[in-house]
Length: 112
Length: 111
Image 1 (cartoon, rainbow over the protein chains, first blue to last red):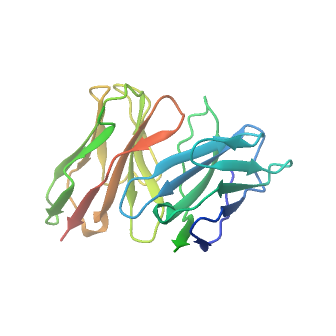
Image 2: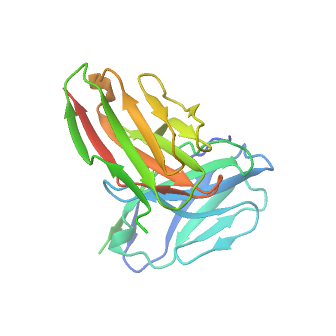
């Protein structure tokens, strides 16, 4: 699976959009981009995933560049409860039998 | 619908003792996973299972054994605990290879 690069930490003001970048320049055509987050001391939580097109769900939006070498997770109106470590993961989609590989992620702090 | 549950939540072991961590899911998921997370680190995969009766090694399998005798349960065993196995252990399950659902974690300290 391709490697990902994320900033170590970011701050965001409450109520503003949080934009979390991820570089995955070696991504191949059958690899998806997944985002998970981990709120302090809890198990990780799935947020969203995508292949080529931009995706949106009730939690977030995922913007993938046309060359697929980078992506951005957008939390449209960040709240204090969104403070967490956010993991960008690239992996082969099903049926690929490749487990998730978590890096160190980005620590997002939402500030009142 | 409880999702993924883990037993116990906390445990302290002495070096050389053995124990089993239990993970249970009620979502009828085929895939189940065990991860460990050390302070300041991301999760690392220990073992996983793609169905009842199957297991496979992950990134850091040494010192652990697993069993998946029933679809809803995935057991992680430590035969002879070592201080290096002090960690937080997370179990997860998924329907095939789609999004994983994680349990609340088990905090294990080996003294």
